[in-house]
Image (cartoon, rainbow, N blue to C red; front, top):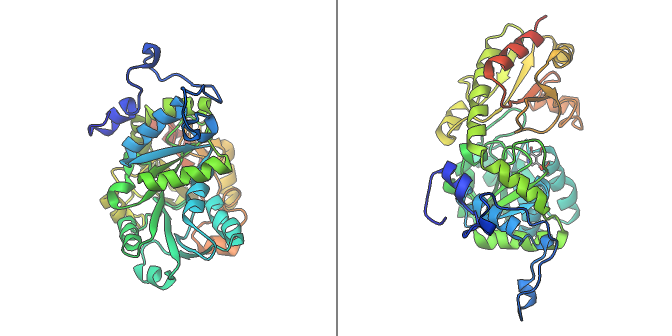
Amino acid sequence: MKEKRGLETMLVHAGEPRPRIARAVVTPIFQSSTFAMDGDVGHQDLQYARLSNTPSHQALHEKLAAVEGGEAALVTASGMAAISSVLLSLLRPGDHVVAVEGLYGTTHDLLVHDLSELGIEHTFVAGDDPGAWERAWRPRTKVFYTETMTNPLLRVADLPGIAAFARARGATSVIDNTFASPVQFRPIGHGFDVVVHSATKYLNGHSDVIAGAVIGRASLVASAKRKLDRLGGSLDPHACFLLHRGLRTLSIRVRHQAQTAAALARALEAHPGVARVHHPGLPSHADHDRARALLTGFGGMLSFEPRGGLEAASRFLGRLVLGVDAPSLGGPETLVTLPSRTSHKGLDPVVRRSLGIADELVRVSVGLETAEDLVADFAQALEP
Ligand SMILES: Cc1ncc(COP(=O)(O)O)c(C=O)c1O
């Protein structure tokens, strides 16, 4: 399907093999590690699952490229496989990365530990301060890296500004669009060169797959793929099938989750047991105006501080019936975590608090439950 269609149409139809394979309405799973050579062809025509070129991979690549508006796409064995393949394909020893502060913890660690060990340096900057970007920039800055929304405070950087700044200096802009998904933000249309995803989250959406994706210009995706081929982080065909199945319902899931998150955020903000709510859809959020201007919805994530400190937060988690105390996000069931005990546990508590992450902050990935049931469950769990 080459012509431009609406997002929901592309999610269902883009990349589906035509003619249909054995007339199957759903693209079958090609659970074969290798494929017979078709006559006298060269090594480059080898079809082998590690090279991400089975029909299971190819259908997904076309669908993801269509929905993110990129020339090409690549699926990977995890979000980290996508991020590491992209960064390793763009950077050499002596190069430098400018990255927006507050990155997902393992991406932060990849920059601080693994890339540093390879002689690749980095500087963290505020997402809305071009003066700081300018000061951080070096002759060998090759990548400007950001996320659409930060975890767990859901800050939204000056995203088009970042893409334009990198482009004007000949660097590659890379954005992790996991939290917004292409339903609520399509970075390529705002000037970004490469989009990465933890497809484990909204793209798959069923809490049953670990996967990642890279979308962008064909030359950049091809170079990430060469890296992935050698590092070996390809997605298994069965996981491709599950991701493919999840993608078909991405839009209705994310829209429903965003609607429920907005209702829950409003209810929590009005609750006497809650000191503060962070959700970009609330006028009280620091980046509300920017989020309104850039995003087509505010996503399914929020965080809040119950009154009464860590004790109140622990009591809340213990009483919650529908929300599951587990990391990750983007699934059908509401997930709640305390970043001070999970994703941000490794940080010095003083530093963590200075970043605005209170010990009692609860992060919520809103699921697909009925909004009224979730609001009632949160309210009962917040009772003094
Ligand atoms: C924003 C973001 N990027 C990347 C990742 C890493 O993805 P994965 O766990 O699929 O490797 C995560 C995982 O939580 C994430 O939240």
